Length: 392
Image 1: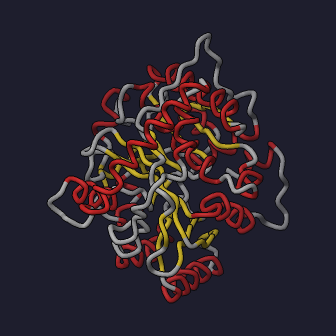
Image 2: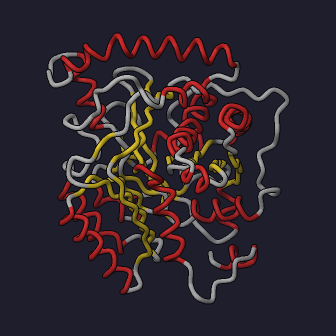
């Protein structure tokens, strides 16, 4: 096992989707690292109320708050739509926990959404019979996104949800959260190819070999299935989701009102310039928009392969047929959700350092997860704490 202080720097970097199904390319997360799980409770009701963007942005806000608390973007994280997972070394445990609990309180007061936050060590996950292995993929604009395999993250989520008191985050006297870097200034991104497919696939073998054919097929379709392209970015104003950004950044009502007005005016001033320069590759706006499309996290791995892709009807049928064949053979379980647009929440440090979290519209990951759960459930399943442990 790589010593903890050097772990992130020495973790392997993946270049292609094909490498994601090579277990030997992943390394074990150090035993004393903490796995934080944060997700929005009762997200289904929020979706039914048309509030999925707020749910979605809160998941991204957790990542921003955690990295700000660590004063570094070099910590592993995975965005999951209605929540997120962050891994942190023991020296950062208190800071990350404090930030997430402060964000939890702020979200409850400004949006009414309740965030569940829990924490477990990699050692405890291993004692329950699963492995936590990680690799990274470097994005062109500086961020490095974590890939996880081994079944440990799925077990960590189950344990935290099943035993919330045991794995709760310890409260601090003066919790603080900075969400500087979170941006919700792009309107919904329409499908260019026909429809947005949000896809979750869980291999029954932690080795992930069953995903090889699927990932090879998706790599052949890239970059055309990326839901964010220079051609379909909505260069419209005003930003429909700006209020969501402001709510998660600021607790005070007056401050929120002033910040909202200032950014609303500023984006209005720049919107005309962006529209004129967006398709000029040598302009600042053109370079940023091209970089934006290249720095989306529309495919990821956290024991479950997650993808938000823009597909034609024919491509959708081919992918579904492939998945059903794998399912019938007992290799995978999966969930799919379709919409006509994608949501994008941004993490922007600068024009040169940024990443963009993508989800499907109208529920995206959360709705696909419901279908995946139905696929995973067996007729003899018993939903109990003992069953959670026995299933791993």
